[in-house]
Amino acid sequence: MTRFTAPIVHMRFDTPLGPMLAAASGSGLTGLWFENQRHFPVQLASGAWAIDDGHPVLRAARRQVLDFLDGKRTGFELPLDLSGGTPFQQSVWRELLTIPCGATTTYAALSRSIGKPQAARAVGAAVGRNPVSIVVPCHRVLGGDGSLTGYAGGLERKVALLRLERQNTKEHTTI
Image 1 (cartoon, rainbow, N blue to C red):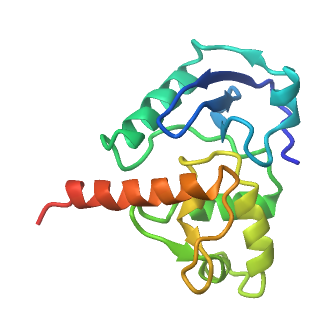
Image 2 (cartoon, one colour):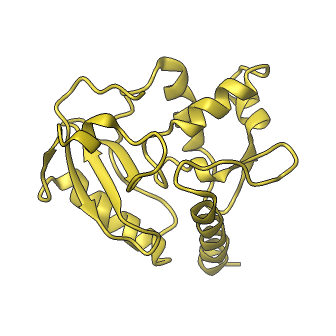
């Protein structure tokens, strides 16, 4: 379970891939989840976090996610607060941020890139617990044989995100 110590606020917004909830602390975006996805924070489901549709980080996250899903951007410029994870999870989530839009990697390659070559399963667990869907691109991680593996938001969304990114990176590439 992801634990947050700072006060958190959230907002809900609709996307072409379904409703999302974004959460932020005073330090940055702490979460971005598809409604009712796996590993949905208990605090959000219970109503423990206040709604704040005017929070500047949440407004920027909504705008950037919608632009991304509309093919108008290939990356994000948002402050992130990943403090809800363990140090190991945070290292995995930071490494996910290095995977370029339109590219993919494997759990084994990701574990090697953080200096833990024997930890592919632990890396997989950390990827699965990523609290900031889309922005921290856990959807770009595939099985060792290139197969699509689990995605907390559902495999159909993972497929849609990968297709969108391939299309967007082709459109934004200049030769």
